[in-house]
Length: 412
Image (cartoon, rainbow, N blue to C red; front, side, top):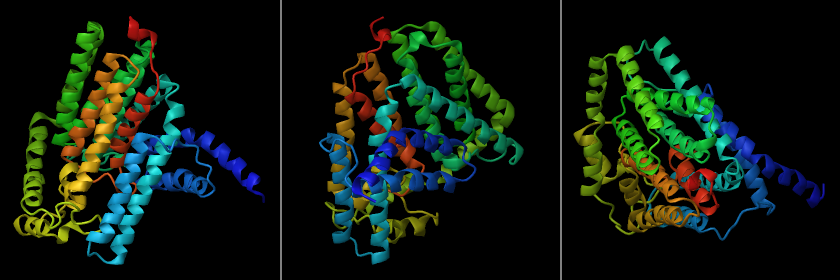
């Protein structure tokens, strides 16, 4: 086989990558087992992209600012950990694998998402459909197998209550934003799709008993309604959206009961967020610049030992992206993270689109920040649900801001 014989199928693969990416998104909502969702990423996307990298066939703009910042963060996290951390080699290899998988994810997003943005209406419909299918699956499981008791969780990547509804919230934000691009061309089916996704996302978020995502969803929806009211005064749509929120709340109270809902929310007070945060802030890493190192088990640090001694909970992860990044990679790593987020914000500010679109994009960015404040502790990790509500929306915002998007509706 000649080099040209090898390059031809790799070139065709890059054309099919957006479709494979959509299948991955669908599996995140409805795959019967999370390993299927993870396996699809490895077998259908990451390994072929790796093969393309080896033969130099990855058609990607290596001068892209955000891509360079992402690579810099990944390289620093890996190399810094090798220097700082006293962990054994198995843990170093573990951290190296996480960094490499995250790099492959970033490349997949940069390769697969831009072609999909050429038809924002289709992508918006697709994401909202995934929300509906994933939410209905979760509600059916919650009712049939749990008898509407405990906390709701879904299938695929939605198997964990907090992270699952976080994904639904981000899919809703992006899907609604994409449909908004052609809002004057929306059919009644599109509006029904959007409002159904809104109702189901609100219902699942409330039933999950997760206070962080519930607060994030409430703030994001209120923000979107406020921007919509000021920019367009589409009162019928705003009233319909408000009605959806009321329907979701009434439905949850009817299925779950007010007393049970309050009980689950109150019981979440044992999540120990304040203890986790205070322990890591009171016992910072010895190296403030470089942190503990990504390979270091946070449970073995002074903060981790304090957490176990005072609470006995099963994790020492700080459940806050900024505190976790500081603990693992120090002030340098935290600075690189802030540079990454600042780059995305600058992309939104300089985007060649309407001012209203920029306000909605800021809303999506704010939703990510609200979710990572009380949940994940790092962006550099193996195939996990957090990819879908951190890397996906951040890179989506960047790629969207790099393109020209002027719909006729923007001028009306």
